[in-house]
View 1 (cartoon, rainbow, N blue to C red):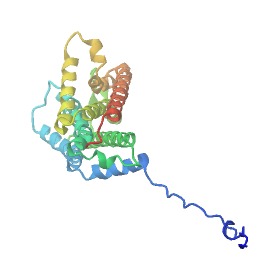
View 2: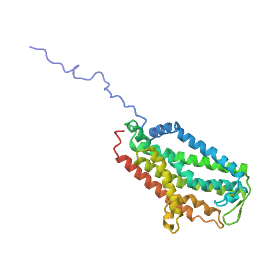
View 3: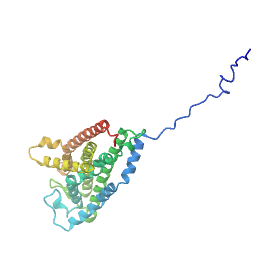
View 4: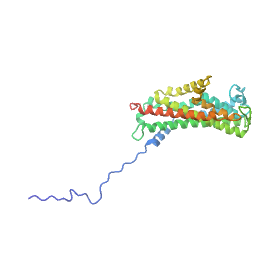
Length: 297
Protein backbone atom coordinates (compact mmCIF):
# COMPACT_ATOMS: atom_id res chain seq x y z
CA UNK A 1 0.00 0.00 0.00
CA UNK A 2 1.36 3.36 -0.95
CA UNK A 3 2.09 5.93 1.71
CA UNK A 4 -0.71 8.48 2.32
CA UNK A 5 -0.29 11.96 0.91
CA UNK A 6 0.51 14.58 3.49
CA UNK A 7 -1.43 17.81 3.34
CA UNK A 8 1.24 19.93 5.05
CA UNK A 9 4.39 21.27 3.46
CA UNK A 10 3.37 21.13 -0.17
CA UNK A 11 0.13 23.05 0.21
CA UNK A 12 0.49 25.28 3.26
CA UNK A 13 2.23 28.61 2.90
CA UNK A 14 5.59 29.03 4.58
CA UNK A 15 5.68 30.33 8.10
CA UNK A 16 3.38 33.14 8.28
CA UNK A 17 4.43 35.99 5.97
CA UNK A 18 2.41 36.38 2.80
CA UNK A 19 4.38 37.18 -0.33
CA UNK A 20 3.94 40.80 -1.39
CA UNK A 21 4.12 42.16 -4.90
CA UNK A 22 6.82 44.79 -5.33
CA UNK A 23 5.55 48.34 -5.23
CA UNK A 24 5.64 50.26 -8.44
CA UNK A 25 7.87 53.27 -8.21
CA UNK A 26 5.86 56.30 -9.34
CA UNK A 27 7.29 58.15 -12.27
CA UNK A 28 7.60 61.92 -12.18
CA UNK A 29 5.68 62.61 -15.34
CA UNK A 30 2.75 64.73 -16.32
CA UNK A 31 2.68 68.49 -16.78
CA UNK A 32 5.60 69.30 -14.41
CA UNK A 33 7.90 66.95 -16.32
CA UNK A 34 6.82 68.42 -19.65
CA UNK A 35 7.32 71.93 -18.30
CA UNK A 36 10.84 71.13 -17.08
CA UNK A 37 11.78 69.52 -20.37
CA UNK A 38 10.44 72.42 -22.44
CA UNK A 39 12.13 74.97 -20.16
CA UNK A 40 15.45 73.19 -20.60
CA UNK A 41 15.07 73.25 -24.38
CA UNK A 42 14.01 76.89 -24.38
CA UNK A 43 16.90 78.12 -22.25
CA UNK A 44 19.28 76.44 -24.68
CA UNK A 45 17.85 78.27 -27.70
CA UNK A 46 20.04 81.06 -29.00
CA UNK A 47 17.02 82.75 -30.58
CA UNK A 48 15.28 83.23 -27.24
CA UNK A 49 18.44 84.58 -25.61
CA UNK A 50 19.02 87.06 -28.44
CA UNK A 51 15.39 88.18 -28.26
CA UNK A 52 15.57 89.00 -24.56
CA UNK A 53 18.98 90.64 -24.94
CA UNK A 54 17.69 92.84 -27.76
CA UNK A 55 14.68 93.92 -25.69
CA UNK A 56 17.08 95.09 -23.00
CA UNK A 57 19.79 96.70 -25.15
CA UNK A 58 18.00 98.27 -28.12
CA UNK A 59 15.70 100.79 -26.32
CA UNK A 60 18.59 102.80 -24.76
CA UNK A 61 20.28 102.93 -28.15
CA UNK A 62 17.09 104.28 -29.75
CA UNK A 63 16.59 106.86 -26.99
CA UNK A 64 20.19 108.02 -27.35
CA UNK A 65 19.74 108.28 -31.09
CA UNK A 66 16.59 110.38 -30.72
CA UNK A 67 18.43 112.84 -28.48
CA UNK A 68 20.52 114.12 -31.40
CA UNK A 69 17.77 114.20 -34.01
CA UNK A 70 14.78 116.30 -34.91
CA UNK A 71 11.72 115.13 -32.97
CA UNK A 72 9.42 112.86 -35.02
CA UNK A 73 6.39 115.11 -34.57
CA UNK A 74 4.14 112.99 -36.80
CA UNK A 75 4.18 110.17 -34.20
CA UNK A 76 2.32 110.15 -30.92
CA UNK A 77 4.51 111.78 -28.27
CA UNK A 78 7.24 112.23 -30.86
CA UNK A 79 7.28 116.02 -30.47
CA UNK A 80 7.99 115.73 -26.74
CA UNK A 81 10.93 113.30 -26.78
CA UNK A 82 13.37 116.12 -25.99
CA UNK A 83 11.18 117.51 -23.21
CA UNK A 84 10.54 114.46 -21.03
CA UNK A 85 12.00 110.99 -20.84
CA UNK A 86 8.52 109.57 -20.35
CA UNK A 87 7.65 110.67 -23.89
CA UNK A 88 10.54 108.57 -25.23
CA UNK A 89 9.17 105.50 -23.48
CA UNK A 90 5.67 106.08 -24.90
CA UNK A 91 7.07 106.72 -28.37
CA UNK A 92 8.89 103.37 -28.24
CA UNK A 93 5.70 101.68 -27.00
CA UNK A 94 3.75 103.00 -29.97
CA UNK A 95 6.42 101.85 -32.42
CA UNK A 96 6.82 98.45 -30.73
CA UNK A 97 3.07 97.81 -30.83
CA UNK A 98 3.05 98.08 -34.62
CA UNK A 99 6.23 96.23 -35.54
CA UNK A 100 8.17 94.74 -32.65
CA UNK A 101 5.66 93.06 -30.32
CA UNK A 102 4.06 90.86 -33.03
CA UNK A 103 7.58 89.67 -33.85
CA UNK A 104 8.27 89.08 -30.15
CA UNK A 105 5.13 86.94 -29.95
CA UNK A 106 6.05 84.84 -32.98
CA UNK A 107 9.79 84.23 -32.54
CA UNK A 108 9.28 81.53 -29.91
CA UNK A 109 5.59 80.62 -30.17
CA UNK A 110 5.61 80.39 -33.98
CA UNK A 111 8.27 77.72 -33.90
CA UNK A 112 7.27 75.76 -30.81
CA UNK A 113 5.08 73.15 -32.56
CA UNK A 114 6.28 73.50 -36.15
CA UNK A 115 9.86 72.98 -34.99
CA UNK A 116 9.01 69.61 -33.47
CA UNK A 117 7.32 68.62 -36.72
CA UNK A 118 10.26 69.73 -38.84
CA UNK A 119 12.83 67.89 -36.70
CA UNK A 120 10.68 64.78 -36.23
CA UNK A 121 10.92 64.83 -32.43
CA UNK A 122 7.29 64.19 -31.51
CA UNK A 123 7.92 60.52 -30.72
CA UNK A 124 10.60 61.49 -28.24
CA UNK A 125 8.24 63.90 -26.47
CA UNK A 126 5.21 61.65 -26.30
CA UNK A 127 6.38 59.16 -23.69
CA UNK A 128 4.13 57.12 -21.39
CA UNK A 129 4.43 59.74 -18.64
CA UNK A 130 3.89 62.84 -20.81
CA UNK A 131 0.81 63.23 -22.99
CA UNK A 132 0.12 65.52 -25.90
CA UNK A 133 -1.95 67.72 -23.64
CA UNK A 134 0.92 68.04 -21.15
CA UNK A 135 3.36 69.03 -23.89
CA UNK A 136 0.85 71.42 -25.43
CA UNK A 137 0.18 73.38 -22.25
CA UNK A 138 3.86 73.40 -21.26
CA UNK A 139 4.76 74.96 -24.60
CA UNK A 140 1.92 77.48 -24.29
CA UNK A 141 2.94 78.54 -20.78
CA UNK A 142 6.59 78.98 -21.69
CA UNK A 143 5.76 80.88 -24.88
CA UNK A 144 3.63 83.27 -22.84
CA UNK A 145 6.37 83.64 -20.23
CA UNK A 146 8.97 84.55 -22.86
CA UNK A 147 6.63 87.08 -24.48
CA UNK A 148 5.82 88.74 -21.15
CA UNK A 149 9.46 88.74 -20.06
CA UNK A 150 10.47 90.40 -23.32
CA UNK A 151 7.76 93.04 -22.80
CA UNK A 152 8.92 93.67 -19.23
CA UNK A 153 12.56 94.06 -20.26
CA UNK A 154 11.59 96.41 -23.06
CA UNK A 155 9.39 98.52 -20.79
CA UNK A 156 11.98 98.85 -18.03
CA UNK A 157 14.81 99.51 -20.46
CA UNK A 158 12.91 102.17 -22.43
CA UNK A 159 11.59 103.96 -19.35
CA UNK A 160 14.88 103.96 -17.43
CA UNK A 161 16.79 105.07 -20.53
CA UNK A 162 14.37 107.95 -21.06
CA UNK A 163 14.62 109.05 -17.45
CA UNK A 164 18.42 108.91 -17.39
CA UNK A 165 19.19 110.33 -20.84
CA UNK A 166 16.39 112.91 -21.16
CA UNK A 167 15.05 113.50 -17.67
CA UNK A 168 12.02 113.15 -15.43
CA UNK A 169 10.33 116.41 -16.37
CA UNK A 170 6.52 116.58 -16.28
CA UNK A 171 4.77 115.19 -19.33
CA UNK A 172 2.23 116.92 -21.53
CA UNK A 173 -0.98 114.89 -21.77
CA UNK A 174 -2.89 114.23 -24.96
CA UNK A 175 -5.41 116.91 -23.98
CA UNK A 176 -2.70 119.48 -23.35
CA UNK A 177 -2.69 119.11 -19.57
CA UNK A 178 0.50 118.82 -17.54
CA UNK A 179 1.11 115.44 -15.92
CA UNK A 180 3.50 115.47 -12.97
CA UNK A 181 6.58 113.29 -12.88
CA UNK A 182 5.24 110.72 -10.43
CA UNK A 183 1.85 110.46 -12.15
CA UNK A 184 3.55 110.25 -15.54
CA UNK A 185 5.73 107.36 -14.39
CA UNK A 186 2.67 105.50 -13.08
CA UNK A 187 0.79 106.05 -16.35
CA UNK A 188 3.76 104.95 -18.43
CA UNK A 189 4.02 101.74 -16.39
CA UNK A 190 0.27 101.15 -16.79
CA UNK A 191 0.53 101.75 -20.56
CA UNK A 192 3.23 99.12 -20.99
CA UNK A 193 1.28 96.72 -18.75
CA UNK A 194 -1.80 97.10 -20.95
CA UNK A 195 0.24 95.83 -23.90
CA UNK A 196 0.42 92.42 -22.21
CA UNK A 197 -3.14 91.45 -23.22
CA UNK A 198 -2.76 91.97 -26.99
CA UNK A 199 0.74 90.48 -26.82
CA UNK A 200 -0.70 87.29 -25.33
CA UNK A 201 -3.40 87.28 -28.00
CA UNK A 202 -0.74 87.52 -30.71
CA UNK A 203 1.19 84.73 -28.97
CA UNK A 204 -1.92 82.55 -29.08
CA UNK A 205 -2.32 83.29 -32.80
CA UNK A 206 1.31 82.27 -33.32
CA UNK A 207 0.73 79.04 -31.40
CA UNK A 208 -2.32 78.22 -33.50
CA UNK A 209 -0.45 78.83 -36.73
CA UNK A 210 2.51 76.81 -35.46
CA UNK A 211 0.23 73.89 -34.62
CA UNK A 212 -1.32 73.90 -38.08
CA UNK A 213 1.79 74.27 -40.26
CA UNK A 214 4.89 72.14 -40.52
CA UNK A 215 7.25 74.89 -41.56
CA UNK A 216 8.94 76.85 -38.73
CA UNK A 217 9.60 79.81 -41.04
CA UNK A 218 5.90 80.15 -41.81
CA UNK A 219 5.11 79.80 -38.10
CA UNK A 220 7.41 82.72 -37.28
CA UNK A 221 6.69 85.05 -40.20
CA UNK A 222 2.96 84.34 -40.43
CA UNK A 223 1.90 86.00 -37.14
CA UNK A 224 3.92 89.12 -38.03
CA UNK A 225 2.11 89.40 -41.35
CA UNK A 226 -1.25 88.78 -39.64
CA UNK A 227 -0.49 91.48 -37.08
CA UNK A 228 0.43 93.95 -39.82
CA UNK A 229 -2.77 93.18 -41.74
CA UNK A 230 -4.82 93.69 -38.58
CA UNK A 231 -3.16 97.05 -38.00
CA UNK A 232 -3.88 98.12 -41.58
CA UNK A 233 -7.50 96.99 -41.33
CA UNK A 234 -7.89 98.91 -38.10
CA UNK A 235 -6.60 102.06 -39.79
CA UNK A 236 -9.18 101.92 -42.58
CA UNK A 237 -11.99 104.42 -42.09
CA UNK A 238 -15.55 103.25 -41.54
CA UNK A 239 -14.57 99.96 -39.90
CA UNK A 240 -15.28 100.82 -36.27
CA UNK A 241 -16.87 97.47 -35.39
CA UNK A 242 -14.09 95.53 -37.11
CA UNK A 243 -11.48 97.66 -35.39
CA UNK A 244 -12.95 96.87 -31.97
CA UNK A 245 -12.82 93.15 -32.75
CA UNK A 246 -9.10 93.13 -33.57
CA UNK A 247 -6.59 92.39 -30.80
CA UNK A 248 -4.06 94.83 -32.27
CA UNK A 249 -6.42 97.71 -31.46
CA UNK A 250 -5.84 97.03 -27.76
CA UNK A 251 -2.23 98.17 -28.20
CA UNK A 252 -3.64 101.72 -28.37
CA UNK A 253 -5.97 101.48 -25.37
CA UNK A 254 -3.50 103.40 -23.17
CA UNK A 255 -4.21 106.62 -25.07
CA UNK A 256 -7.27 107.27 -22.95
CA UNK A 257 -5.19 107.30 -19.78
CA UNK A 258 -3.44 110.49 -20.91
CA UNK A 259 -6.61 112.41 -21.77
CA UNK A 260 -8.34 114.90 -19.48
CA UNK A 261 -10.58 113.55 -18.17
CA UNK A 262 -9.19 110.06 -18.58
CA UNK A 263 -11.42 107.37 -20.11
CA UNK A 264 -11.00 103.62 -19.78
CA UNK A 265 -13.65 102.25 -22.12
CA UNK A 266 -11.11 101.12 -24.75
CA UNK A 267 -9.09 99.44 -22.00
CA UNK A 268 -11.92 97.13 -20.95
CA UNK A 269 -13.00 96.54 -24.54
CA UNK A 270 -9.44 95.62 -25.47
CA UNK A 271 -9.02 93.25 -22.53
CA UNK A 272 -12.24 91.43 -23.44
CA UNK A 273 -11.34 91.20 -27.12
CA UNK A 274 -7.86 89.89 -26.38
CA UNK A 275 -9.20 87.33 -23.91
CA UNK A 276 -11.59 85.95 -26.53
CA UNK A 277 -8.84 85.73 -29.16
CA UNK A 278 -6.47 84.05 -26.74
CA UNK A 279 -8.93 81.42 -25.53
CA UNK A 280 -10.31 80.61 -29.00
CA UNK A 281 -6.87 80.31 -30.61
CA UNK A 282 -5.52 78.09 -27.83
CA UNK A 283 -8.54 75.80 -27.94
CA UNK A 284 -8.34 75.48 -31.72
CA UNK A 285 -4.61 74.77 -31.52
CA UNK A 286 -5.14 72.09 -28.87
CA UNK A 287 -7.94 70.39 -30.80
CA UNK A 288 -5.86 70.33 -33.95
CA UNK A 289 -2.79 68.97 -32.19
CA UNK A 290 -4.67 66.28 -30.28
CA UNK A 291 -6.53 65.00 -33.35
CA UNK A 292 -3.62 65.09 -35.76
CA UNK A 293 -1.60 61.95 -36.44
CA UNK A 294 1.92 62.94 -35.41
CA UNK A 295 3.24 59.55 -34.32
CA UNK A 296 5.22 59.23 -37.51
CA UNK A 297 7.43 62.17 -36.63
